[in-house]
Length: 376
Ligand SMILES: [Zn+2]
Picture 1 (tube, rainbow, N blue to C red):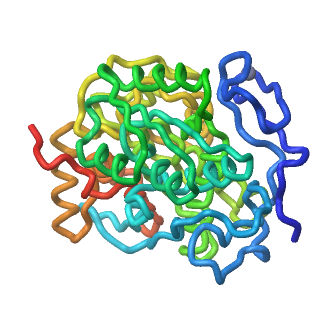
Picture 2: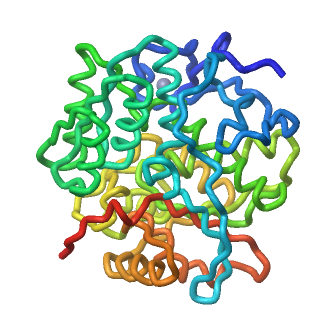
């Protein structure tokens, strides 16, 4: 099978539907909407390279330049292990075992390979921590200078991780949105804005989690796919991955999506409740689930569409529920950060809707080693 190149690929705006040839100079469409890559390769099981240990087994389905060897740190193909929570059988997808301790590596590795192929040597992003640490690590691996704009409230463990990879760290006072503004301004004069939120390859990288789960369950989709949601790139990317499996005729139904959020920052739940097509910014309130504290997700329109398409749910968890879930899960040998524990904390709310025998995949997104050591 021929490797998928960028020739003829288009970026399509998820708001107004207009398209432009990829690559583009600026991420948002002229209408302000986020864009996604179109004309993707049909998922072909025969082209999976089963010798490859990580997500590069799906290389034939990934729109990355056909360079010699990709820059990799061994990301992807994380374990799916059985577990139980309050009487519900679940499968834990251990995304915190990715190279930088979070699922973000799936998207970053594609973005960085793309930057490298274009001869980019300076990149920047804004992040509350995990995406920043991921870009710093892959930048270091690829020899690309990385500058990160990080909100002052980001966990010291995450900031230390970004710094040790050698990235330039700029701490921005104020809420999360201020870090984004600072990054956007800096990108006007030089470094490429390798935004994990806007860059279309992020979603493509996230699609690989759906393909792995499909393989790990014996070539079938789960009934439920539960994940914490901040910007929602994992939820939306996985949904796109399942859609590609469905259009290839490999699954006959899509999973029900569950977007878990912290009660203190739940714009998707609010939009679902009021029937809006897009989220409205919610007031920023501090939460221990700092990694998912996104007041107005960029791709909310596509996310809400995906949720509504198959009876998706948007449960929220209180601070206490999140902290308790983190501790209880650790007592079973699994140590995740509070943001990730959000997905576990909402499981009791799903109990009545899950039928016996249904498969529930819960994505454990980030390592507990990133947790601030002192709380409260
Ligand atoms: Zn548009």
